[in-house]
Image 1 (cartoon, rainbow, N blue to C red):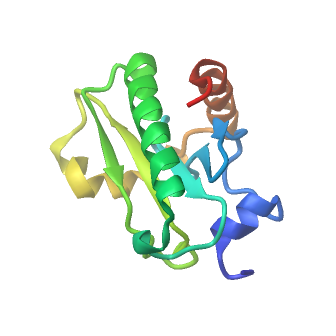
Image 2: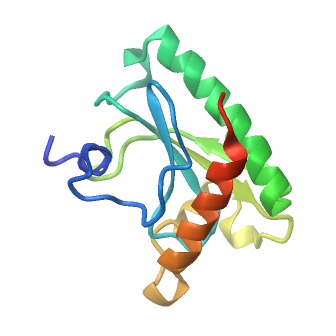
Image 3: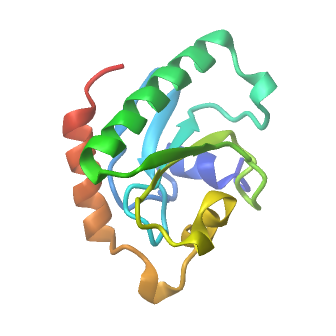
Length: 149
């Protein structure tokens, strides 16, 4: 799966996030997306390679739901966001591997990046990227607070 960047990141061959995993379950890993202009943009990544939701087992769906619920509440507690977006597309080049985005939607988020337009914050200009050290600290904070699901 050398073309799958999620598989490469999960194996440790080429990590995507500069921070540590926030949570590692039996089937899923919760990490911070990178690069992004939005601190708190989390991604739940399936530990095995699958490219469609219908390929998931009932156990994988069950754990995913628990992680999404805990991560959404934790993002609200930590960021004070108005709501959280959940998205699963798995269509980008090198990212057909099933992963679910959990994105804190700030109360003052400009209309230009609300809804699906939020993806503009995922691959920002270099000067808009949240510094790796900030992401690392944020992941460590969430990891301490996350607990088990």
